[in-house]
Amino acid sequence: MLERKIMQKLIDWKNQKEKKCLIIEGARQVGKTYIISKFAEENYENVIAINFYEQSSYASIFDSNLDMNTIEEQILLRIPNANLVPNKTLIFLDEIQNCPRAIMALKFFAIANKYDVIATGSLLGIHYQEVPSFPVGYVEKLEMHSLDFEEFCWANGVKKESILDIKKYFDEKKTVPVAMHEKMLELFKNYIIVGGMPEIVENYVENHDFPKVLELQRNILDAYANDIAKYASSSDKSKIRECFFSIPKHLAKDYKKFRYGLVEKNGTSRKYEGSLQWLVDANIISMCYNLSTPELPLEGNARNDCFKVYMRDTGLLMAMLEDGSQEEIMNGNLGIYKGAIYENIIADIFTKLGKKLYYFEHNSTIEVDFFIRYEQKATAVEVKSSENTKSKSLKSVMTNYGVEQGIRLSSKNIGYKDNVLALPIYMAIFL
Image 1 (cartoon, rainbow, N blue to C red):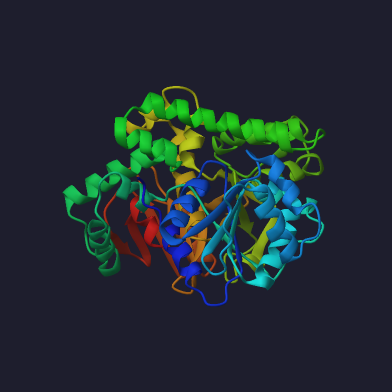
Image 2 (cartoon, rainbow, N blue to C red; image 1 turned 30 degrees about the vertical axis):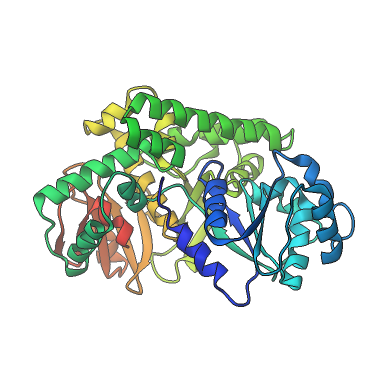
């Protein structure tokens, strides 16, 4: 069984005196149904679970009036052995995007405040427009991701105390012991290849079978393609697929800005920007925006018309490459793709830390991989996949743009020079 950090967040939500309904958003197969079911089993006397994908007929519960009395009557009428005990019951509405009126009903559950209600959905972002009246102010949202690197370490037998020990070296800016450093680098490479999808991590931990990992990853990619075919509008299906499968091509370029011309010759933003947004709303990709100037506030200086695109799970990006790429990463090869993959894993880590993604590029002569707010300063972050950690762009942006500090992530140990903090790449989780 995989331990997930979101479990504590669910417990904290349950213990609130005045709670709203909770919506858990996240990509398909990140473990939403499993973790809510486990949470329900461990914390409630009574659980009513409705999966609107598998039990589509239950959508009729919400066809009539949405007042609490009517909803209670419909639940008791249609669901065998349903037991609605106020303050001791969790109502779990899974794949709620398939029942827009159930989303509307969350308002009335919150007003009545008789039952705890959790809703989950894999494609909620692309279905909100179908909801006639979204219950703003009556719901709390929580985003769930695939396993982060720390959770991956736990799954692979690393004790929480060991992660805390590594955190001490980060806090004190002291060199990590060689054996510990090399073990963490090995785990990090494995995480790049395996990714964080729960089914895949469990299979890897049990079997350490990379070909099976690749098979399972490609099954998920097929599921994403099927979602596009099922849920996207007819006019957008092919455009969304083209954008999705163009991501490796973009990351293979020295200049990684997303260019519609790589999706289709003479492609334009007018034709494709809605397709990219669909993938963002489905929690499949993240967008990293160029800064007009590298200073705070980052969001205020972001350019919406200039961006890079990253996969939410780097293991899935690896599965989009040709066979043999897993072994190449383990051996330190893959040429320019290696740098792109290491960038993607840091984008994934930052996203799981709740950070929006930004970078800085100017005239194709300066490109800093990421900018984050760190210690209340605009901080340049460079990602190095090779032993060569020299960076003209990092030095230039600090010299010419008034950037006070930088962070360099690589396979090397901790160091500090000229206001640049050098960190082992696995320590990105502490930023």
